[in-house]
Length: 124
Image 1 (cartoon, rainbow, N blue to C red):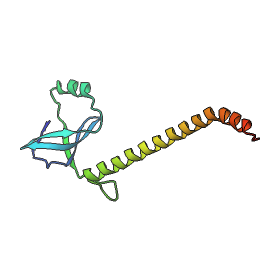
Image 2: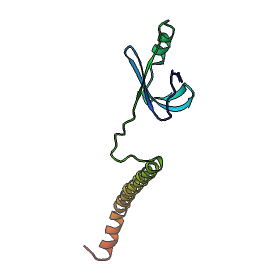
Image 3: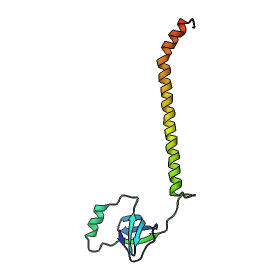
Image 4: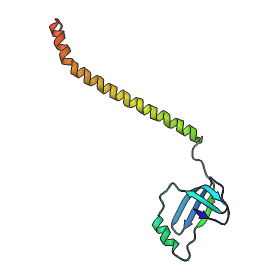
């Protein structure tokens, strides 16, 4: 949670800077000037807490406009459906590999007895 001098819109990307530390987070909730952030990166909590004990600890907040890197952004539903397709393809691939292994094992197990039957019936 941060407390800033101005309110931020939900979904905006915020950069918090102090000396060499930079924390990038997305606003997930807000209540007046307070906002809850979610960061994709690991946060150096011990270093931040040690800086918080200093008398001049303050993070500078800059609002950064979110830039979509994908040409055609996907919704949550589209991502979920794509993940289901990939999961299904993976299961089918595993099934094919296992069935191929079973066919190979069965043909090896039956090769000798079938050769004996063929020889007994007058084959090569």
